[in-house]
Image (cartoon, rainbow, N blue to C red):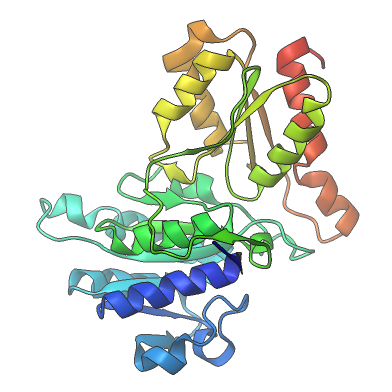
Length: 326
């Protein structure tokens, strides 16, 4: 094991996959000139030349070109700069990329990755702070992943690049500088499989991305109260690992779902509905959800913190499902 930052782990994944497969290339805004605004592409142009490209500010062109490149036999990795901008290319994403393989009877693969930095980050304000997985989850034909650590960031990106279907890779901006252990040897983090980050018997917390850390902080504080929390890190948001979630809920009989996205129409609602469908009779309390308040993310630091879900919100939710507290 070595210690790498989240950003460096994704950079290492890109370098390894580009060395392994000459059809992999990456492009986006400020990748060559700046190494990516979070340093996640630094040094790649020196080794791979024109397989790393800067492009004009046109998300429609960036995403549309990824489809064309994938159809001609390459494996493009397109960077969205900020996940918020993915809406500009929604027709290309929802009506073309997600549907081409199906509409043409599976005659071609669509092996592309769209990297989308997301989440609330140091007063980036309303247009640069969103968690937009809820926009994407309703579209059949797309895979969605969201790593929570340097190790999962590298493993998921490598798996996404090798996948023959389109993958949206959400990487929370506040995770980039954070460091953690990463295996020395080559490895892949499987798509569609959740990770049990902490075993427990009293309450299941289902979470992903940046909220994994807040849930782990909450679990430590709750342990002092004698509450044993199980934490499931989804890693793949679509299709999420229903089996692991359901088996955990059947064991603990209580569930909290936590994410940084707003709760309205979010992934937490889909997970809650799945538990209701498949494990209702094992529940001893209603499912609780934790998420951002349903407003645009404010610029003010105080208001930003108020809107974003915090460790204390997770703790309150756990107590609510255990003790029926308000």
